[in-house]
Length: 181
Image 1 (tube, rainbow, N blue to C red):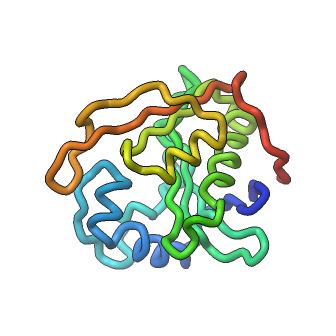
Image 2: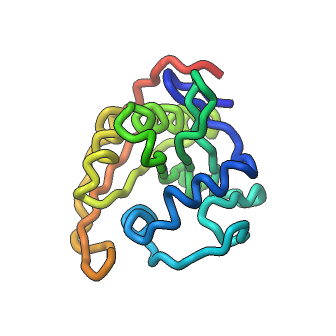
């Protein structure tokens, strides 16, 4: 398990899937704002669930996020679109509704940075989010990500085009937090 100050990132467990699915992906609004794809219902236990992990996928590293004190599940995290040639990846974080506003997201991004830069040897990490997603904007900025631009009307979300903010962080700009492995 990778450890931050508040959270641990570990492999996805089978019993995490229904909790993550119900809270983060069964709601059309939450799914549509987070995933960049239209919501569609998924049967319980479906291999097509957004939270089911394919351990053979080399372009993605998916984690469950747990509270270090209680080991309770608090969300999901991933590096996706991992490009081993250009040594870059995108970050994804989903915090359960009951765990939001407690600093888990910011710590999760810090641990993902450690994983990307130290464990994977990547050079660049990137976050794209809806421009009005203040929680993710704060997670990025609190971890040293630089706002690189706005992609105007780039996301179709529930009947309207919305802007997306683009943030990047290079390995040489990263200031690591003290992590426990």
